[in-house]
Image (cartoon, rainbow over all chains, first blue to last red):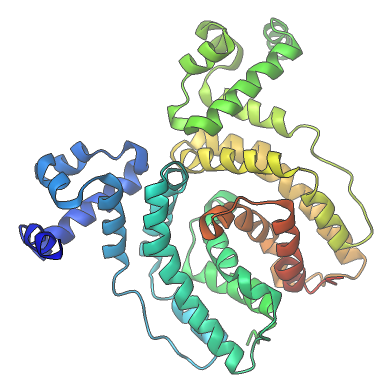
Length: 199
Length: 199
């Protein structure tokens, strides 16, 4: 099976694959998951629908692969020596333009993941879990350094705090999320909730 | 103008109006804003499309009015004497079933408000602002009582904390938001971030 997959995969070049994923993410931001059709992907990338289905199997798989491809290389080895430094550095990996593109992407998927169990599964596996894993490492180091108590009840809500602020910024403030906003939120909310130094 | 509106409004009874709004909110949760058509509303409520347009003007207005109607009566005079008591009481106004219906409603609107400036405007005016106003009063009393410092930087992020946790719960934990979850989040995150007593 693995060999068969390799053979199928080899029909398109990595450059062509990257181009396709970019087109899928663009469409996703523009029209959302439900309105994204394989026809539209085929038209925009000047490929045949048959090729798309042969290569990826279907829409949830194509979208999940596109998102994973987009995130690849983002997993980092940030270790500044303080929780504040680490969280600021993680926030600063994406410039404001990328952050706003990702906010639009998230909106496009928010409704869809709840209506499509396959997409939700792919989304959690490929995006939420790796991100949580990364934050867990950062926080574990803070606990090891004595910056955060191991039994601090806010520990289990780190992702809710960060993702929630990112997701609700536009609705509440009529402004997209920016690095400056997230860093201010980390200092005002996340670090105090964790009882960690804010300076 | 106000008189003309009253005359037009008087054509349907309050009971019929409430029935219509319920149908609109049901459809919104089921299919989301984009797929919600005036045809579907007319079919489900056995009314004519002409009546709907004459009465409400259009889809954004009908949806905004339906949401406002749903929220009416929720503005309360909660004043328990502590910030923790007030926030817990505000969270407990909605039972878990209503909370989950509202989470589905929010998902249905999340993408749409960003694509429809009229809907975003109605959404902010009729939902976000009154809710923020209510939380502002609760927090101001906490400041007046000396529970929270007037210059606490987390004060401006109260809505991001609460709405964010509500919005991201399902995605992060595969479980819908519940009273229990929100109360635990308030104790673990919101009160410590505000420097307020957690007991």
